[in-house]
Length: 496
Ligand code: ADP
Ligand code: MG
Image 1 (cartoon, rainbow, N blue to C red):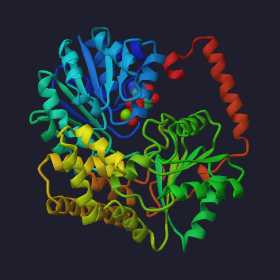
Image 2 (cartoon, helix red, strand yellow):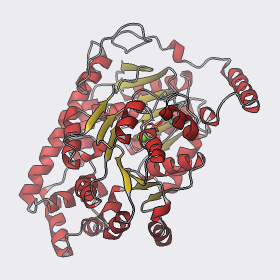
Image 3 (cartoon, rainbow, N blue to C red):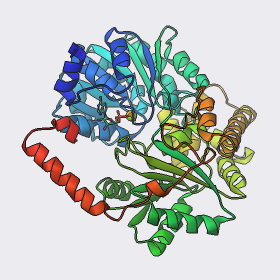
Image 4 (cartoon, protein in one colour):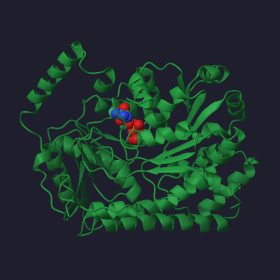
């Protein structure tokens, strides 16, 4: 056993590294700036958590979502780590003050990108050595990625202000173009790159053509009933998520509920927890669901309609089979899907009239403070993502209606282009996996040996169906695990 393997076992109870982890960790330990791509579920968190224990100082992690941060903090705490906290909008001023005034006591600090803009936070961070600056979901930096977050563009200057600590940028889904942006924004010209395949060989890729929506609904009911669960059905809109959940509850014996961004956070947390703890078999949701849902045994992901981008598709199907066991992704297509997706994308566009109103609100606000401007717009009835984008562009100098419209049109066209690309590659007659991987600049040769590939290569869904004796098997497995636990045959880490 190497020293690194010993440390892995000591801190996490794992006996071996997952593919790529050791190389990434070694690069981080040598204090090299590192850009790393590992597939969804590939174990990216460990790539900064283990070095955190071996380096002096604080590991600062930028994470785009509250649920992601909370999930990571909970996991570290469950593993016995007390020196961990998350700095985000959920904290009361007192809690926030406590963390910041005791900053030297922490080993891992998670932060939302929004927290970067506070000078107080920056000053407190300057008072401690930062051993590693981690950017999780680093594709959010790129304006051309699928999940752009304007606040991520401040990470470069922020890092500089902290005295240029070594960076680890992590992502599961980035094209070459996006990776170039990551390097550019963070000033990582000389970063070491560890890029591993985004392929998830244990996920079968199926595409099925239906005549219309009614046929899709019947097919989803059939699949939800038959397939081994639990599963997720991604829907194009909030309304569809709700309606489909009602249909499935009526048509199947599966416990189904819905989840989307329009629900209040209490309800969302409840549904998510029920799903994680196997009190629900199926979730019908929009793309708001998934990030930070740490559930290893999701067996199927169904797409009710086209995803918006290939990146989003990889992220969404990547929630299946994190335990490495065979899992299936099924996309249902019908005439009209592209038009529907087009409409959804175009709904985000703003008319000249909207833009005039936005500009007048911004100018009246009399500030250039990003967060304030955003709040003023949101309070004025502008949708949150639109407010974010408008303020970001305004502060970048797009201060007239014409300049804003030009930029927004460019973005809209990019989105439409990406949607058409993913539609084409999921609709092709030849190997779909090959096309998806080619999108991420990877070559792939179907070898016919590593299990089933995709519907173009030919598939058989029966191995993914629920077996009658499943319940008994489960009880048997639990009983075996219980004995192992009593006699200490497995480490705590392996059990978790
Ligand atoms: P992602 O790459 O999607 O961020 P995570 O960091 O959330 O993945 O890890 C996914 C799962 O893999 C977690 O449950 C984690 O505990 C587990 N994991 C990470 N490293 C190892 C390892 N070396 N051996 C076994 N399991 C691991
Ligand atoms: Mg992760």
